[in-house]
Image 1 (cartoon, rainbow, N blue to C red):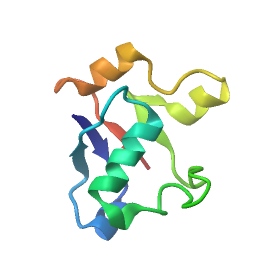
Image 2 (cartoon, helix red, strand yellow):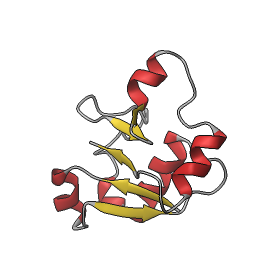
Image 3 (cartoon, rainbow, N blue to C red):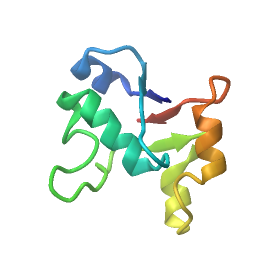
Image 4 (cartoon, rainbow, N blue to C red):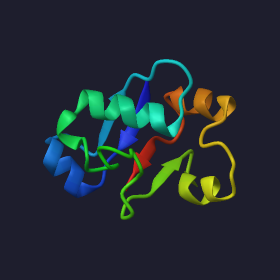
Length: 99
């Protein structure tokens, strides 16, 4: 289970609270979390990433364990390492969020 915090405009669109939980199958990566989020909340499809290219929208930022994933990916590092994915799944860790 991955906890995701959404910015206010996406909360309103999806009619959800600030934080939602999604199940991710396999390794927790940025793509797998977004796939799970869009599967759980279809109204969000196309708002976080482009429909056809699946590239992120330029006005959204992604964070995991309080680390900016956009800056991290710019340095060509993996989005979520297995150790980060495991800590992201624990109830005591900081939630993953986009916004």
